[in-house]
Amino acid sequence: MSKNISVAIDGPGGAGKSTVAKAIAKRFGFIYVDTGAIYRTVGLAVKRAGAEPKSSAEVTPLLKNLKIELDYDSEGSQRMLLNGEDVSGLIRTPEMSLYASDVSALSEVRNFLLNMQRDMALKHNVVMDGRDIGTVVLPEARVKIFLTAAPEERARRRYEELR
Image (cartoon, rainbow, N blue to C red):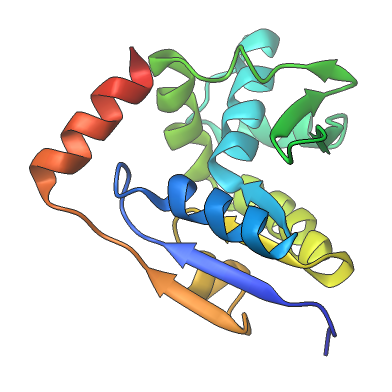
């Protein structure tokens, strides 16, 4: 069992998971892991390869050549690196949201990223947010939070994020 502390924050899109996760990570000096950004990064790689994001036959072969890294600045902000390139600014678009949704439905992608996410939690104190974090990714997390918000607030937050 890991001696590191894992905090898992689950909930639907737009509930404020990342806002809460960043605040907790900053307060306790933990690493914040935005798992949605990781899926968006895979989505970008799939798009660049011209592969169909819903096709495991097209996406799975791409995974073996992907190098996805998380990097952090002095403020603790996460940057996503795809094969050494900072793609943080490229993955926050409505199109990449769709790609992320499609690739996250593929079991091969989920398994590929599951190992990466669990490995981070073994090596560091982490706060992870996303869907299925407390049930699938970090079922043994010391702290589990399920965060939700009214549908109107979730819609407003998502709209603001995508503007």
